[in-house]
Length: 157
Image (cartoon, rainbow, N blue to C red; front, side):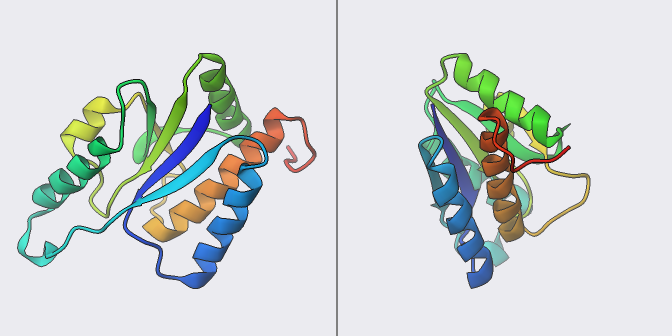
């Protein structure tokens, strides 16, 4: 199974981008992995939040196939421990899914169309984080999940 992360907007901070790249390389030792960036919407000053979410949603939907298992990183999603998240990844792989896609939305969340397409919603925390930092935190959790699945000593309970 391939794991893919779709994220709206680029990462501007070099230190965050370097951390994401490091974890992405580590993840690739366990599973095929790709981080795709959906370009920021242009001229957002003249748009409502709903218009912006709709345009981002269209871009997200264009990257998905009907066979994908889609998990949104969403503040209203289910909070998981690292072991529960590893179990989620493992069970999804065992289900025969070819691609597990995690989606990190823009600043206003997701369009109704993206919510309707999602198979799962996962929350990293009840706190709010900058979107760029979410990518780094989530990349680390994906790596941690792979080490848990393989029984390696990275994670400590």
